[in-house]
Image (cartoon, rainbow, N blue to C red; front, side, top):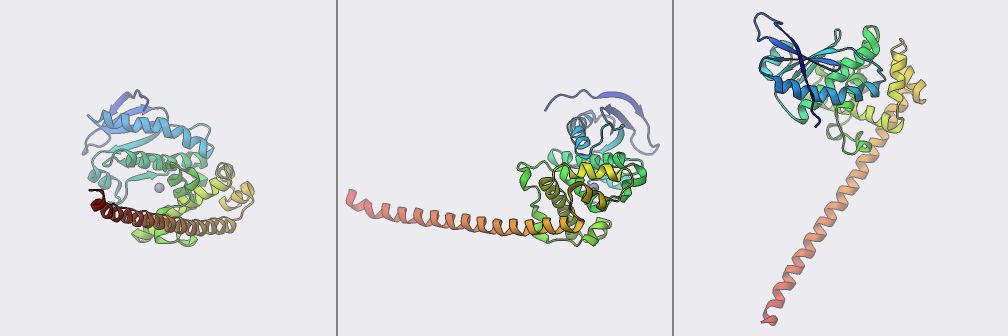
Length: 284
Ligand SMILES: [Zn+2]
């Protein structure tokens, strides 16, 4: 990881009855941590430095203004201050585009949460306060999930395990607030939204960036998708769904062949051992 110098510009007491926050300014964001948590600020600063330019490019945002990221090492404090349930790891309020993340889990999880929430904050800047909420929930969450999941094999990004496990969620449910649906369906809703966005970018690269440009000028998301790639929303959903089913069938075939090969290898190994035992008396 490349080194990053975090400049501590100023310290400010945000709340009289909570531990004071220290603001650390990095390129594109102000990171708030509690006193003595400079290591956490540096860790999040590195994530911002790496991921923010990538997200901006993906959504077609040429320049962004700095937004606040509050980083909580204490999960209880995060849930208390953001009034979220225990399964939530991050929250972005739009407006004003304020990000809060639970840094109780480090490493890949923290990187995922920060990148996911930054995507919401930058989408808010891309579309502005007038049009940000015109974006369907699944498109907003799908882009945040897609851009925060660093796939080792990008062409497989649209084959999502939770979706395969829980089945598809109707588009009507995907348009509303995800946390209003039950926990398993909620997980599937995130997975399906991500998979649909990943499929679109796999089949028609650059469509999202072009469509967001139109939405930022007040045009409906659905119409802009059709203008950008020629597909209606129906075409998108059914095209993705058909490919998912085909991928599942192929996956079942591959799994079947692998199990068959493993059984064959085990059988051959056993026969070899038996053959070896039979030879022993004659070789003495
Ligand atoms: Zn989100």
